[in-house]
Amino acid sequence: MFKSKLLWLALVAVTLSWLYSCRVQNQATAHPSQLNFSEFPLKKLSDYGFYKGELKQLAPNDHVLEYEPVATLFTDYAFKKRFVWMPEGTSATFDVNQPNEPLDFPDKTILVKNFYYPHDFSKPTGERRILETRLLVKDQGTWKAYPYRWNDAQTDADYKITGETIPVSWKDEAGQAHQINYAIPNKNQCKSCHNRKDVFMPIGPKIKQLNHELAYQEGKENQLTRWQKVGYLKAKAEDIAKVVPLVSMNDAKASLGERARSYLDVNCGHCHHANGPASTSGLYLNVEEKDPFHWGVMKSPVAAGMGAGPYRFDINPGKGKESILTYRMNSIHPGVMMPEIGRVSIHKEGVALIEQWIDGLGKGK
Image (cartoon, rainbow, N blue to C red):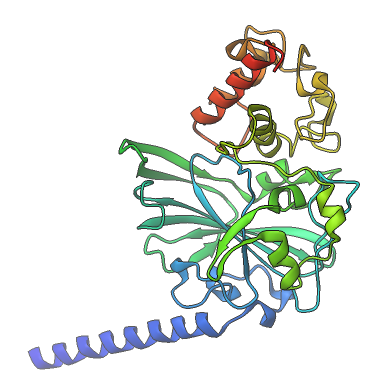
């Protein structure tokens, strides 16, 4: 009896091992070029074939290209890894006269965005926990969003449209412990930000965001150069040169104004621009806007309600702590905070940057 039980357990172990090896092999052999878009959304992230080998390593498959915007959207300090895939022989283009518009991607483009937290921020490439992966898929001219929630074992992610709150903890660069309830948005909430002229589309991949170097396995290279080499972008060098690139908020070589305007562009400008969901506010925070009044300088809000707090102007030059802009950034109250979704915590470094910039505006900087 005892020997029979041991034999049964051994058979179970062998079977599970075989099933796991088959799954890893299937993940390695799958590829986006083999996908049938009429079957989307697929049940599991691994079914798409974006990555080679063990899924959690996020090692891109052939022609799955990593990319990274220079100015990043704050999402509760989460790290992100982004990838793009396009069908062979197709390329993205852009309109030099519309620098705030995302690239015009060909049909069947897939954009992949992974959200994760390293356990220790001082070791960003060390042990981590991936929480979600969001796909944006262009099919028959229309963009669709497919969200995936990673399992606790970090072996795969399941299609899930209802959203979820997940307790997350990490240690920052200074060794301080943090814990939040990370909010995965439901599928319908995607439309709140990804909306341009009432059309659902990407908001991140723009020429002004990609015109900087990224470290690839072969070494560092300008992303736009790499995209052109692999055939993912058709663009003239003189047109690219006309687009003012954004900068990182931590770029020591950039001016305070460049860093602040870039930060506001990526964190607020996707809604607050002439074609965005917040266009009626008259507050336009994309870097192409040249009129300080539309940045909020000495501008009273149209209908902020309790979001204005005790302050009169979106930006009160010289008074970084007494401006509606920073008041709303520095809040997590549902009736006050901006952005309205996408975070459950305050980006202290971002608030400090914008306060410093507004203080400088009072000195003519």
